[in-house]
Length: 296
Ligand code: GUN
Image 1 (tube, protein in one colour):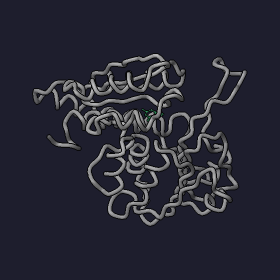
Image 2: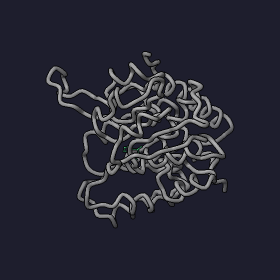
Image 3: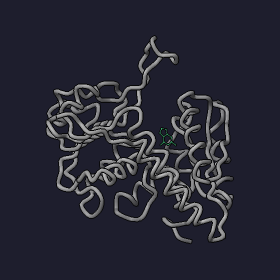
Image 4: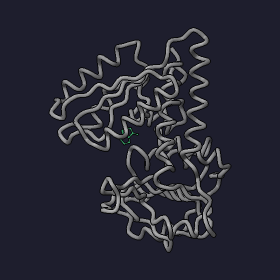
């Protein structure tokens, strides 16, 4: 078998087109444009790239945005004071603090300072808790984007064995919650693997759907998966490559060549999950502007 490609770039483009149309309708109804406030602490090169992509997407769909930069020496008190100011500003619909933060800052503490009604990343414990118990909530953008891809390609999850490799708060844990829910989207039997999992292959080999979000290049190889598996590779790793102008190549957490020989569907890196994360952020920001999740 040679896998069909799950084209995240294409589906993200379609999703952004839908959001652009929805924003236009929202403006035609006499509303002001949605506004996303981004907070960027320090000068991490990857974070600069991600924030640049988010800002460009906002412009493309008609969402207004501003990036507030703070030095990497900023105190937790000062950062939270800034967040509280944004919370209280009615002209701001969504707030996003780009992660990771410098090590002297607790991301839990900072995320909890954001008004959960403006938490378009879906990281606040109120949104994660509400997702878990089936209440309306902002859904974390990468997991929500993966479900959008399943929907677009009519890939069923109901009754399947879904295996998630990686238990991060940004991807692994929320996608495992969404996959495992019997009353809504996932309806899958779900296994979560992490760095303490003793025999990773024993789990990955039985997966009908395999989500890999471990941040480890080429962790999953062809011999670790079964024929026909659907593979979603969330990893974006920079691997040194002198033949490239930038000096590195982007690779996922799966060894693409060997895994795609056995899979029925696979996401490429880049061009798979990454663009969907940004597209879902646009969707969440519009939902925030419309007060759809938390009506007033
Ligand atoms: N860092 C890596 N992914 C994300 C994301 O989805 N949101 C934020 N705020 N930071 C990130």
